[in-house]
Length: 494
Image (cartoon, rainbow, N blue to C red; front, side):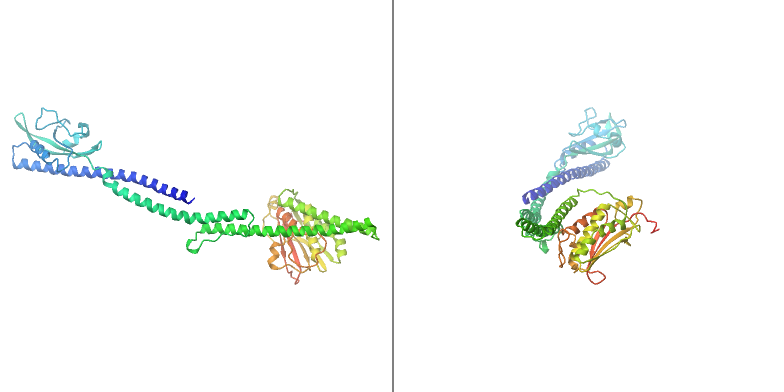
């Protein structure tokens, strides 16, 4: 990858150099043409002025003939490709002022159409380039003898020169500088390639180890003098992913251990009492059957909760939200646990009056949430469990259901409190994970241990939120608080 990156960067530099070289050569050629044209005009003006001065000092001579002789002598020193002296008439025709009857000969590459004879007749200099040859025509006034009469005419000296090629002037320096730039580009590209590719290759090796099961593999963060924000962020993301995967694996291991424990305990009881009945070793077969039936129900609840949690986390469940009497649903679900609470010697207090407030929820799922919270509280409570339902003071709208039902109506809260051992502060955010055990206490054989995870999934799906508080304002215990979208105001609330 380093070689490919280096080659790509060098090719980009070469392409940029070729483009800039073409532009440079074009500009150099344009500059050489302009400079040559200015030189020819300057030289032509000087020659014309010299001829006019000579004609004034020696009247009666032939200025055109003298100029032609001078041009022949200066052709080498002036690096002229061609030269000519012509006379211009008012109608645009030109002729040879030395031999008027002979067809005028212009320098190679220059035609009569290239010369603006009208401008020349008005004593304006004409210059240009044709096919790589630069020309300049400088007019001046002169007297010549035509048919025995001296006449004042406009003559012009025409000079041509091939400008130096752009490659000859800029090419060698461009070639040397290009080679130096390519060498520097290769060195920089190679160093940058190694700087960027080496951490990526190291990250690739670590991710391969993680994929193969080595969750302890970590990417070494770049050193301070070679730290790039993107590479550092990539390394930290991979390390964070590895840590999360390690935590998930540990949670899965604990989950399997907990499920195995929760399955083994009732199975042991069922097997023991079944063998006792089979061997005739029990005095009260009905009592043994009741134990077997209770433990079977416990197994059934555990399996049902496992299936429910898998369905919830896969989002393969349905909800049927409706406006329901919040207190009535909670009270019905809670009072069903009175026999279990009495059997455990725990006082179950329910404060969920009917007709006080409504909620936009699935009533069956709300009953399931209530049941799971009470089961969790009964599992750890010391002497009491308290259930309350009513309108909340939380006014932060996050539920699309409530908004779709005709505007935001606030929240309703379900709180389930107990006087158990409480939850450490650093574990409050994890109590809704599968089979996470955050507090010691009497782990009573009630519930499956998956209740809080199911509560979190259901409450989130219904547009609400749930959190745990511990210790409570009474100095101990735990409080679970569920907030759900409220429905329209009841007559009592109005």
